Length: 386
Image (cartoon, rainbow, N blue to C red; front, side, top):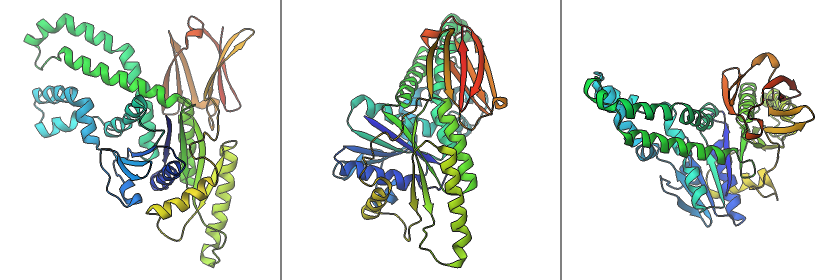
């Protein structure tokens, strides 16, 4: 199953380009699902059809789904949520506040994204296209499998073992309800599902991200940060889509300076993101809603190319055998050496770039080897092992 995620700063046109790509995939004979994980769904508006939490056929071979985040939380977090509500209530917290505190920020979008795992498992669709939340939320979502996987390996076994030992006494003396085994089992299931989703997202032969950018300085800067982050976490980006360029045929003097700026920013985007392929789209004279308009955008985007293709292949993380040992390379575009902190702790390498941090489990081939040195080589952080 091919998975394509569309993301970018809020308002750049993610939904429109996701919907247009999905329509063209369906036209080419792929059984296609386009899903929205953004809390502010707008797929229904783009297709001019009512969508809900169940995939609905929009067009032959094309299905749409706007995920009900609350339903996803109840399905995947229900038992843990019930325990947290009971815990907070036992501490004197108001029942409404306890309900709010039992669901962590970003969890709605995260569990919505986990639908990808279900479709990947049942292989019901050829292509799944995801209209993601704005970039900031997407960054948090895509790091969640890595973070929860770390907790599963380091905290969960200790917590569960300790719970078995102290439960008989704790239940009598503690001023809060002690979690049952079923709560720990629910946490384990959620963590395992997230780890499985992480494997799907990291599979560059199946899953790629398409970044949408408008010709504006702030949008370009945020897209740079997002691209660096996706490389740090091992996710593949295969296309940059520059949306809403002012077309050259506009002759009104009022827009002349804007046209010049757009061309300057387009050149900047091409220089920054090379060698990634870049596709441009004009600012259309009308709102893009309905199948005819989406089909027009799809043709402008891809021409005769297959939208399900992988347009650029470059592995974010690579291991290389050297005469003196091995090197682990992580692509970190737009990053300077002074911005990176690097630590080795047992079987893990911790890489921090600014406010982004990743714990990388050392691949089996490098276990037992020590980090000898590290340096930036172009846009790659190269870590050398003995």
